[in-house]
Length: 248
Image 1 (tube, rainbow, N blue to C red):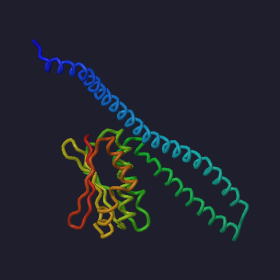
Image 2: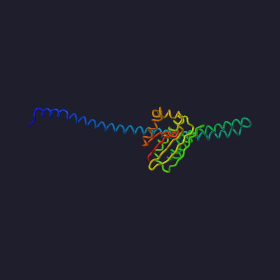
Image 3: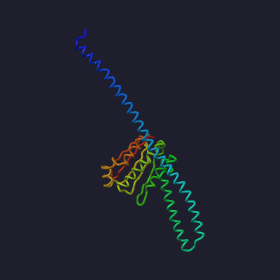
Image 4: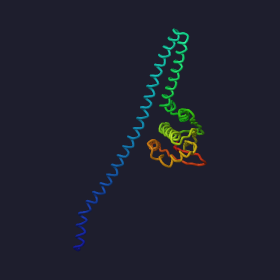
């Protein structure tokens, strides 16, 4: 026999149990929906980086073709003018031609650095060497040395390349150093890239204040997250070391 208290509990359960079931179902469905949206947003974000890299490649290719075409035309016009001129006019034309050649060479470098050939060929060592050469400007010297025989997936090179470029650029810009070393090594299944430079006062200040909140740093973190890489920073013996680890 049910007592009045038992009947009351049954009635209460009859009211709240359906609501509880609906709540649990709603929470479960919300988690699944949120998970789908997170994965979709992540894919879109990755596609955004891919789109940027493809557009960079397209612009570099078009500029390369455009430069080559007009370089031939300008060279022929210089040759024709040199046949017609003499004396001071010829010397002046030769000077203009030298400046034009220098302009063409520098522009060609910019085009090459916009999307290095090493990236097209998925060549890690060539790409990082070109990066070091590209960032060696004026009294700034960036060097690259590799002790690794095996590199990660070629698809990961693009994100890693631009991340290393941002790290080196920040070192030069914010730490005011003029010597930066990029080193590639490998440890079992891990490919390691290290960026070394002197731990100046400005470097220490940058790393402890703005290094984690800058837009460039956030982009680096996003790119490395795509390839599952880890990035650490250490200061030892007056040297700053950024260590980027990628699974092969």
